[in-house]
Length: 221
Image (cartoon, rainbow, N blue to C red; front, side, top):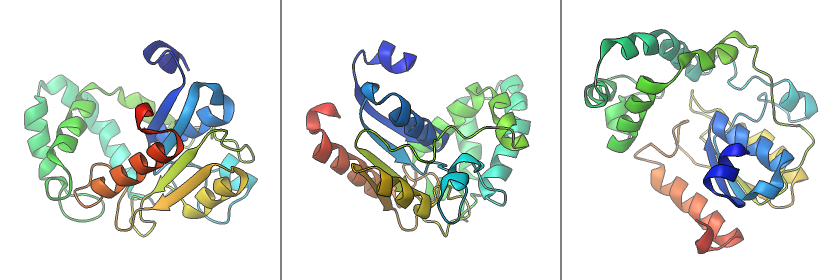
């Protein structure tokens, strides 16, 4: 709320990825007066499986067995050491380019160069302790199971066959069913980093901007 009020000063379009997407979902449920429209990219809206109140309210943000959990554990352990090492963004981005991804291949083979630079910059500035509630299973769900999204919203799901996909299309459909202005789309072949992937960024951009243009117009981009 404070970020929107300070940075935008008026209702705006909100876009969030992963836990940022879940934050956007909570925002449009509780403070729709601050949001014109929302795009949620592969957000954890609850537990995988048949949708219902318990699946949303009790769902872990990242299900056990999802490859992202191992990535988060690695980040939790390595980030403090990286901060102390003095490594530069450029050098770290080069190292990340050779690292294997959860879906096969290396980050350098699958992601846009600017995504690698952003990833490196984030690793060098993140307070890794923010991952502790997620890794220990103590983080509480903040998406309300039976509360509609109060503004036009688009849920973008990664391909559920990918080992790092988080959004469950059945739960996305649950929110579409109770929210008249909500839609969802599955990006076939995309892993969790939908907007960063060489193979899916264009499709994500087209889906997100097409939705925004349709529901609020080009002036709200």
